[in-house]
Image (cartoon, rainbow, N blue to C red; front, side, top):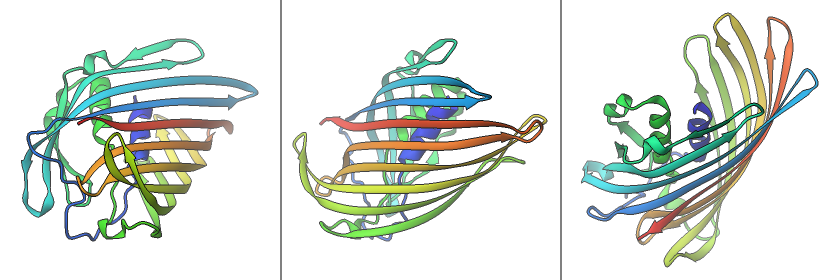
Length: 270
């Protein structure tokens, strides 16, 4: 389930925003239904042996506005209507998700599209259910609305540090954003925004007495379809390729991991 959360974390393409108006303006009293689909393939190579795993994840959600707050913030609720995750490993197949149906989380979205607060009651859910519920909220790209004009292109560099205690993973990501044009998607007039990204990953994980050094790269291409008139997210299509090496320092064992993930988020109603 940690991989599920990580995947959707990758999907959030943050950019510092300076827009005066809120990027998103969902209407109170309207139910916005999203379908989230993800497929992934991962191959691990260790000591001459390969291990392959596949996963397919589908989550149907209902987004509503609970309250309009100051400074363009919105208190929102994301309800999981139904969910199914099938993870096929070399030795077993896991099925997750049905327990998440009907579960929800309340969170606060700020003017630039970042989640700045989450209701702590979500911690009462079982870990697997909580992972699916939280993953369903991490669908909002963040942009400076003033950049969203057809033909505009800009770049960003981010350095993210994750982990706690002795575990620390540093990811430096360079992204190029291009507003390609306008396109109608399911009856919504949208701006089509293309993002390409390249990331370098370095750090270490500490698991009990074992120290594991992590290094690798990640490349991604994403299309975002955003309605500037309605100020809502209409669709995302993303492909992510990863290439990592894990080194277990105690015995100098190397594990090579390659993966491909495709993600689609689509507004299906209204």
